[in-house]
Length: 341
Picture (cartoon, rainbow, N blue to C red):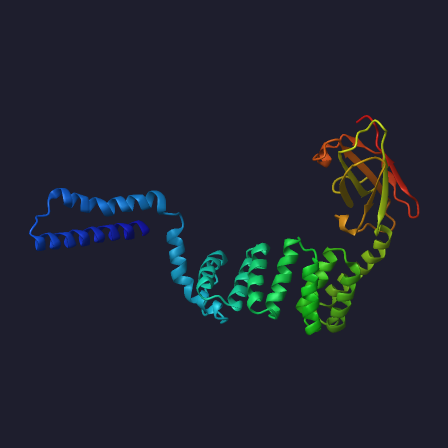
C-alpha cells in the first residue's frame, strides 16, 4: 500500500512537472527537447529511489495507519475525556506513540497521566515516572498523578518502598486518610522493603475498615506476616562480623560477607560486598542487605565470608573462604580467611 502511494505520487509529480515545463516552453517559443523531458522524468524517480534507500523507515506505514485510527482517542485523552468506543484489540504501544505525538501539540496534565498509565500497562516504570512528573509539573496536587509517580518509583525499585514514594503516599493519606489505594500500595511496598513496623501499621488501618469484607482474610494474613517478621527483625537488625586474615594476605580485594541457614546453598539470606583497605575488617549487615525474608526463630543461621584478591572480582571468583560460624545472640562473630585458597 505504501509503495503504491509513493509510485502514484512520483507519477503525479512527473506529469505535473512535464505539463508546467511544456506550458512555459510554449510561452517562450522554445521547444521542449527529449533530453529535457528525460531530465524531468528522472527527477521524481531519483527522489523516490533516494527516499526508499535512505529515508524510508520500517514501520512508517503502520505508524501512519495507527495515527489516523487513534488520533481521536489521543485527542480525548489529552483533553481529560474518556475515549469513545475504544477497540479492546488496540495495542497500548501504538496508543502510546500516538498520544506522545498529540501531547507535543496539546500538552495537558490529564494527557500525561494517561500516558503514564499506558506505560505502566507496558511494564515500563521508568517511562511512567517521567510521564507522571510531567503531569505534576502542570497540576502539582493531582492525586492520581502522585499515586502514579509513587507506583512508578516503587516499580523502578523492584517493588521496594523508596523515600520519595513514601513521602508521596504519606501526603495523599494526610489529605485523605481513607484512600485505600494509597494505603494498600504503601503496605505492599513497605513489606517488600522489610519496613515491617510501617507495613503492620498500614495493614491494621486497612483491617479496621475492611475486616468484614472479602479482602479481610488477605489483609489479616498480611498483618500476621508483617508482625512475625517484625519480631524476627530484632534478631537480625544489625549483624556485626569481624574478618581476620594472615599478614601475608594482601588487602585491596573484594570481601563478601553473607548469612545463610546452616547447610543451605544457593542465594543467601543476606549479603554485603566491601572493598578491603586492611585486615582485620569489621562489616555490619543491616536490613538493606537482606535478600530473603527472615528465617524462623528456630532456624540455625551461620555467617560466612569469601575473599577475591581482585577488586572487581565477583563472588564466584573468590579464591578464599572462611570457615562459617554460627550466629548466636550476644556473641561476637569472628571469621578467619586462610592464606591458601
